[in-house]
Amino acid sequence: MKIKLSSIMVENQASALAFYTDVLGFKKSKDIPVGEFRWLTVVSPDGYPDVELVLEPNANPAARAFQEAMFKQGIPLAAFEVEDIEAEAKRLKRNGVKFTADPKQQGPMKLAIFSDTCGNLVQMYQPPQNGA
Amino acid sequence: MIRPELLSRLCNARDLLRDWQDEPFSISYVARTSGLTRFHFVRLFKAIFGETPHQYRSRAQVERAKQLLILTDLSITEVCMSVGFSSLGSFSALFSRRVGMPPSEFRRSYRPSLAPERELPASLIPGCLSLMAGISEKSNFREDKSET
Image (cartoon, rainbow over all chains, first blue to last red; front, side, top):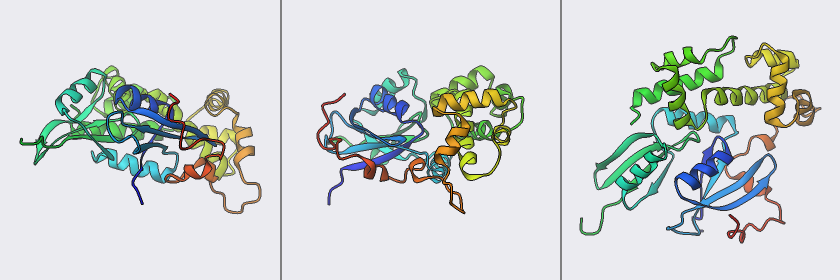
């Protein structure tokens, strides 16, 4: 058994693809029409190319209720690792991304949270550097 | 940075945009409920939720109408009123533009004719990752990575 897919629910798959590629910098991997929706995945250009994030439609009312409640509580539904969280935060802010938590040291990690414009809060984290 | 109480007020505004049923609809009023000017509200809403308050409201109205058309026996006019439109013409036009067919045709296409308990067809409510089951064998699931 392997972990190769994870998913995040999005309001609109087309605008989600634009945000996750153009703004966050992931690469589109799969884009296969399935009925009303798409099997749509992105991969990280500098991470593990065989681990894919599915941009999954949140058309299910139960899924949307969950997503909206988590958003309102300020809870992120995904977390992505970065090397330099300050630089990433600056870059994303220049692109209009809104943060609900600016980068901050919390225990061994530096964390920040932003809105993905698709109905989710997403966390970025910078793990401790070697020797730091 | 968006502080938690502002985030929460924006979420309430989003609920209000979706649930507001009476005409006339006022963005300025919704903006005031979140303590922002209309200008600031529209910009912040778009930056956080990815679409303007108007776009969000239109989409929510169409989504709600789709459910009512499938799940209830309300007439098209009643559906139109229930989602906050006073004009059947503008409702039908918006619905057709977004869904690709008018409300009457949508109802005919998706409503199960003989089901005693109406429910949304599975094709309209994808479950977690169940979309994968719908990928056709012709699609090259493994090897279309070169496509951009």
